[in-house]
Image (cartoon, rainbow, N blue to C red):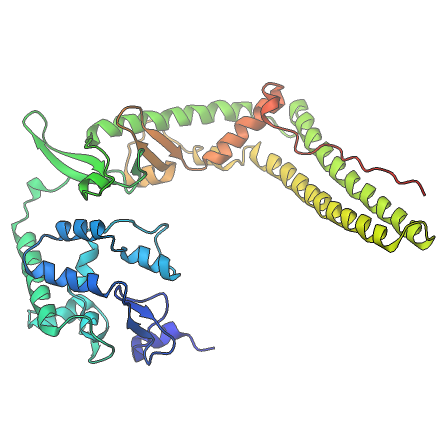
Length: 415
């Protein structure tokens, strides 16, 4: 079978999962691409608004207010795949960068770096070591004119060069040990990291809800979370998690201990109950066949009872599978091979929070304006299961771990 993704760079053939915003995939089109009537006007608005001097942040805010679906949201609506875990309901400012320098919108296909291609269109100085892309002119139907594209691309590169040359290191944001971990506990959106300046603190880095930063209609209230205040809280939480891992590791018994065997026997009893249910169902099915052969029941009664037994057989088989999975999970979790215990096995109490360590131990952090932060650690599910199983071994809190099955009762039919 021919891979269309391999054909794309050389022949300019689009695939369903690689379509620029404003277009949509069509297998009947010569190159697999046609204009999307639902988003065409938004692409035109972006270029027209940008050359009039509107900031990119303002354009994104207006697109969100207009109800224009973001690129990831439009892909989700059309059923295409996209890399991010979820589609954005708002327009990120950096999204516009790809629009303003992409020659696709004037009907030309670019095989290579679109930034270098935009330099070629506006006769800008091209880097000496740059590899010139292959451009196919008139590849598909255009959404904007070439003159409008050149104006927008020229303005974009001029502003970019100015920002690069005038940016001072003293005003740049200090490095952060966290990367996309903070989220707003109210709306769930990712927190935006910005720079703030006050007379008391001077220049410092802080987080604020991206909904407020982007001026969304349902924006959260303005609340700044200084980075220097967040680091000690996260550091303390990781240390507490490490101490908990030490405590639970000391409670994990060996496989030959009495408490371990007692708990293992509990899960084994669940398997016996499930297997016994399957046997009873099989015996009832044999009785039904004998009654049918001897003519003691009608075909209608036979079909009705057989359907009920078939349904029970499926349910009881699922019980056996679940019971086996439970005892495997117990043996895996309630041991020193527990993933959560392994995570903290080489932990150093004098650790320093860096981007590497934060991604290793942390999974998600919710920030709230009126209560402490909520931290989700890596492998936290393994920790919760371990605590549950250890409480069952001690005979405390056994009610938390419900018995998964009860011995089923099957009415015996007299022959």
